[in-house]
Image: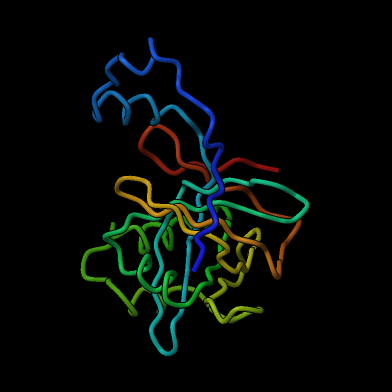
Length: 183
């Protein structure tokens, strides 16, 4: 079986820059606190098993084909379920959905695993991954490639189905807190 490599193999990093030390994890986290990002819930399903997490590491890659990349910590249940099912749904949260963001981020004591789905109304689009009703957008995706990036998997996805609404405020995360941005 030939493994396809999607990397510029002849590219070389700048030797002077490669020799420099990186900032500490603490310095990196502090700097990233000032980066305002949209809040999503990433969900996946493998048969009867569902999992999800609150995530801010989601990025559009290309519009044609419609691709996104999602970074998920390898140690969370959703990572394994995404790997098994080959699918995920990106639920872009509305300003009034802060509580569900807290539920899926583990900020609500005693709510874990399947019990997280007791919060909100859920359905499915194309892949069978749970889709949150009332989200600003749902992007239902198949995973095309998985990259091993230190503590996380980077899932390169193609969007198979979307659902969106044109009202409501966006929920973002900035400087350690959830905030709302009006349209």
